[in-house]
Length: 225
Image (cartoon, rainbow, N blue to C red):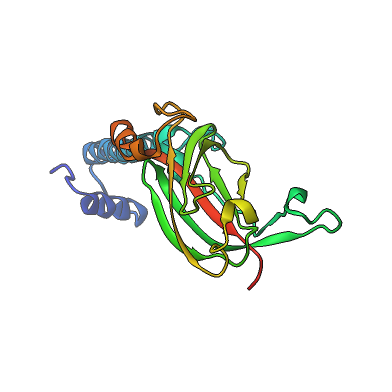
């Protein structure tokens, strides 16, 4: 008697037994062996599929950050820097008896240090305030204005407000109501720069330092027109 070679032959043999038809005992033994082999094959396939799925998950898991609260240098561009909508006007501006806040009238943002911002705005008063925020603490900021009384400011910046304010003396007579053009740089904390650096050398220093990830923003606050 020929040994069943396929699942269809096995089913036919089992049907014969169920219907009470005479069957060869040797053929029945071979059919049982075939059934066991088919079962083992199916189990093996399932195991391989499961192993492949686990391997695929294992290959993906390392790409998921273990601690979403930590930000490495390569992820610094993902940190957003948002400027406040208003800042308080300092008392030394001559408004000691009433609290006043100036609104944001112009702003620019970059996602890398070493890339300057050049922007224009119209001054609405002599109380103009600028604010720089940086995602990387202790970054160097350089604010180059067109005001004779305060042409350049160099200092450090971080996630908190870093304010600079004009007044009637530093702004000058032709400040209010006129369009101004500023150039602002933010450089990494280890850039070779200090408070005595010549503003004309900033481009060269930035070129040597190169660009690095690090979001930052600059805003100008002034009275409503």
